[in-house]
Every structure is written in C-alpha cells, then in structure tokens.
Image 1 (spheres, rainbow, N blue to C red):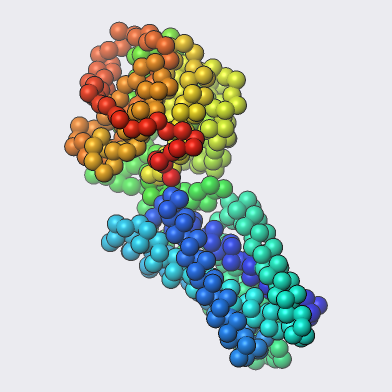
Image 2 (spheres, helix red, strand yellow):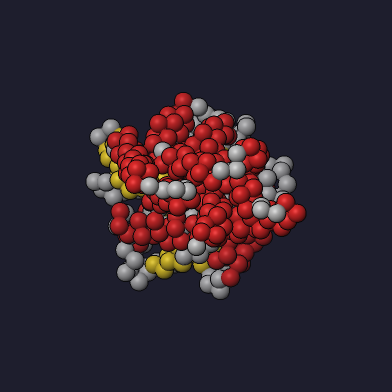
Length: 485
C-alpha cells in the first residue's frame, strides 16, 4: 500500500483543490453574487494561488525532499480549511457591509479565505515529483504521471462536488469532510509514527473539528434572522424572518438578491411588482392558461391559484430545491390540479414545449443577475410562438430608465419591439429615472382583448405606464448579449 500513498495523496489533493473552488463560489455568493465577473475573479485568484504553490512547492522540495515536511504542509492546509466558516462571519460578511465594490471584496476574500489552502494543496504535486523521481532520467515521465493524477483528481472533484456533494451535503459539511480528509492524509504520509505523534494528531483532529463547528455557531449567532441555509445544485439559498416595523416577512434570498417574500401574518406577497403580472387579466379577458418562468418561493403562483379559480398555471423552475422550500416554508400546494411544475431551465422549456399559453410571465432573475438566454431575440421568438392569439409575455426587469444602469431596459425594449406586435412598459415605483427599480415589459401577440370591466381594479397599475420611452440600441441575440450575468 505504501507505494500508492503518494499517488492517492496527489489525486485527492487535486480533487479537494477543485472542490474548494466550488465551495468558494457558494460561500461568497450571498455577499458578492455569482455573476460571470465574480466567477472570473474567484477562478483567477485560485489559479494564481495554485501557480505560486506549484512554484514554491518545487523550490522547497528541491532543498528538502522530506515526506514528513509535506505531511506538515498538508496539516497546515487542513487548518486553513477548517477556519473557512469562521472567516465567512469574521471577514467576508463585515467586508461586504462596508464596501460596495463587489469585485474588490471577491479578490480580498478569495485570496485570504480560499487562496491559502489552495496554495498549500498545489504544493503537493511538485513535492510528489521530487519524492517519486528515483531516476533523474525519467523525470519527464514522473512529472507527467503526477500531473495526470492531479488533473484527473481535479476532474473527479469537480463533478462529484458539483453534482452530488454540494447539493446533498451542503458546503459546511463538505468543508468538514475536506478538513478531516487532509488530516488523515497528513497522518498516513508521516514516517516513523509513534504513540506521542498519534495522540498529537488526534488532538489536532478534535481541534480542527471544533474550529469548524465554532464557525457554524458564530454564523448562527451573527445571522439570527436566517432560519434555513440550504445548498442546491444551482445556488445557496437563505430563508429568513425579517421584521419591518410592525410587519414580519419571510424571505427567500439567492446570491445578493431577494427572490421572494411574504407577510408572515397574512401570507400576502410582499413584492409589489408581482401584482403587475395581473395585467394579463385586463389586456386579455379570455386568458385561461399561464406559464411562469422562474418560481423561486412560488408566491405569485400561489396567489394566482387563489385569485383565479378557473385558470391554470405551469411553472418552469430549474431548481428543485426551491420548490421543496416553497412547499415547506411558503405553503405551496402542489396537489392543486391547476398547477404543473417543470424542473427545467426556462430557455430549454421554451425551446421544446408544445404547449400553448395565453400568458407567459418571465421572472428568472437570480439575485440581481439576469439570465441573458431569456432576453434574446431567439428566446422571445420562442415565447411568442408558444402564445395563443392575443397572448402576451410579461417580464420583470431590474434597471433604471436613464443613466448608468439603463442598458438592460434599453436593449431589451429594442428586442421586444423587434419581436412583438405591440409593446408596453410600466414602472413599479414613481422614482427618479436614474434609480434602478423593477420595470415591467409587456409584449403582445396580435391584438388585445381588453376587459373594460376590470379597468378600475387595475387603474393604479395602468397609470404607471411609460408612454414616451424609446431606445436606439441594437437587439439582443444569442450571439450578441451585452446584458445579464
């Protein structure tokens, strides 16, 4: 078995390095989001840390090719891994509260919280090459073998963590598993073990497990409003109880954004923009069927089922864990025969559905990031094709009407005008045009079938229409999408 210990160590350290990269994204996402910019930052910092680890590991290995030294480095890696939950509360959270530059926060936190253990894990490969190379004439072969093992480990770690470990165990449990695995590797690799060393390593194990547990205690103490912290295949999801004056809200948060919230006492929807989806009832009096892309806590579908007793609604929600949380925490009734849930990507659903709807509602923001694949000319054409005559697509967009944050609505308005026969735009709040807010964009297929009797019911919403909006931007396509995440 001894001759395989180094190979197993190289493989596992390669795997754990990639697991840490995925864990980094989950730990940081509630504070800085998970946009492409943030992912790029995390990957860049991790690769930089690994590069330094490869270089320094090789340099130290040349001077002192001692397997016990490598064992010690791995133990240090276990320590820095074990304190990740502590650093989330002690560093990441306070930094995000005092700084607005998300990329800078991501750089600092990725470097300190995850860069150090990644740097140490990267030192293993050059050490292994030095320790395994007994014949200098075969250093290329040895180096290739070690690099291959490390890379295969990285591949396995990526798929196993992404598909199995994170959604089923959660990042906290996974950090504990990484810590324990590194301690075991450190212990197994050490030469000339004795009782004293074994006792010391056992005490180290208990200490690092204690540090990991303390991180959870610290997090809970500093976040008393979080009642559930859940990892799904796609996101880290927080369920919170938040008092606002005399009202208590239950919320679902993903990344840095508020996905859904309800009044805990009345179960009423808290997000005002959701009521604008009811405009389908005014513009098409014969509307019976609705598709909603993006369910989150299913606050609107639940409201819809209660208000419209003769109408049906289908929901395309990619994240099955969100549906489970909606059932557990937001009273979603999946037994109602008038609702069908498809755990499928919204664009994929539009591409493949044979169903026809009177209304399609798009509410697929993830935090503050828009999924560009649902904003393009091709996607909206698919949506239009899935509509019956007089049908409409109603989309929630977070943007300003003018200024630095106007790009999204400018591009999307131009795209809607290119696809639909008529387009209307509504603001949810009467605020400065340069301030970002929820904007409601409606695209109509053919004409309207207005229900005049409903005017008074929806008068306050209809009066928020913006009638003088124009755009000179290009349309957004699958090959040109300067918006989203």
